[in-house]
Length: 441
Ligand code: PXG
Ligand code: PLP
Image (cartoon, rainbow, N blue to C red):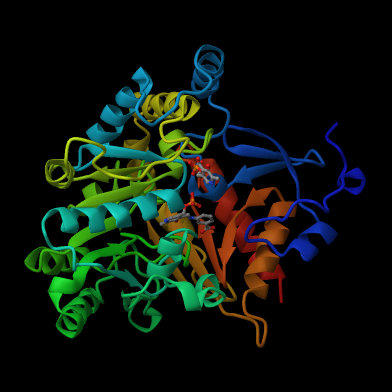
């Protein structure tokens, strides 16, 4: 029997992105996971409608991954990542590179999405400096963007509560594109909204204001996840690519959520046919079984940085746990599963039914928008007067009690199940939400 929450001392743990006092007064504990389901500490089964935090793409407790990690732990528990290597790190890099758009075949390993973002921003600065354009230091993010919690990530990020406490010490020289959330034009879009490509032209204004010669990179999530599922308007990413190319500005796609099948393709870049210069990844790269992340870099950027340096270390950056042996084992096993089980194709094939199920919530009380792409959906609820977020929080709690895990951010519910979800489970997921929506005030 799992320890009951009443006998568990919870005082020492400072929980991340959590209302600690509220949680500890009413804890919600998970004790196990298998396939599409969690088991809560009280024993009830919970259908995982969110792949954990958008990361368990192949479903929980895959025997191939467990076996790979276990074997590696007994063979090579840890290997230094600076000046020494181990075979699996090179194999994992080749395997990741093979899934990236053509040309993005140089891979830097990290342990998380936040580290991937900081790494990518630093590579962008190092690249321009190597080209003799070291004055290009400005970084452009986007309103509502989430790029993790490092100082670089919160600076280019656009989520106000994540920034305001630290506003005095954010990176200098950052500017932001406008976000693309426009329900007055786009509510209930299926897939990419038709309206909004012109919002990318704001980059022209930003370039005119600061001058292209000061701008190093633009970073965006090709589909914004954390902020509540914002699907890029038709033509929007293409426009960002045109403008960045025109001015020699690097384009970074933050694919921490979208890479590894979420949109029915290996990457969002592949799905949308727009190739950035760098791609940040984490989450699904290891099926979340071991923390892992990576940055994929255009070969020309890697070559430029190497050629410009002397004979020693070319890039002064890295983590104790870059390419940790357990992480490379988990990555190799996870990427094998994606390929062997055709999970990216499966996500694509299922996306039509998923879309229909999500949009079946249209017309239910409180629902003011449904948006979706691949195996992601956002369902936006009308906020309660004076209590933003409260309605979605109640849906989340009631769904959990009834055996379905959803996410919420503000008053948007987010759905991003493992790519192994069955059609009946898609209906269970949205059906439970529909019932809860009809019952709450
Ligand atoms: N970039 C993007 C686009 C992300 O979605 C990160 C960077 C940071 O990754 P790490 O591994 O440092 O957390 C993320 C993470 C949610 C949620 O509920 C989303 C994330 C993390 C936790 C919760 O939307 N995204
Ligand atoms: N802080 C100290 C004192 C360290 O020695 C190190 C690494 O050696 C770090 C932070 C960075 O840790 P990591 O490489 O795991 O990011």
